[in-house]
Image (cartoon, rainbow, N blue to C red; front, side):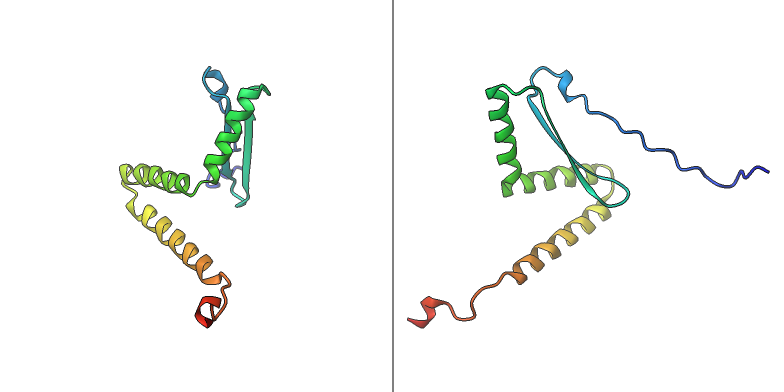
Length: 118
């Protein structure tokens, strides 16, 4: 009749960010991954004024910069180490390093460079 041993999985509750409540924020980009492994991106802008659009463009430029990736990794590292999750950071670092090495290995380059021929 009743099954007390089965745990019910709580329904996920989608939460809206409240970045817009702060007066100084013009734009926001949020990346997230759901249980299915799909990556989602949410973009919000306060309005469509020229200054807001310019600030949004600056945000996009920053996201495209390799330095911002390293900064994000450093923030994640600090948070994981502060939480005592060194093993998770180590796994993350190893996976990122292998991905970077794989991408560099797959780059196509000529076997003989033109400068070597001369």
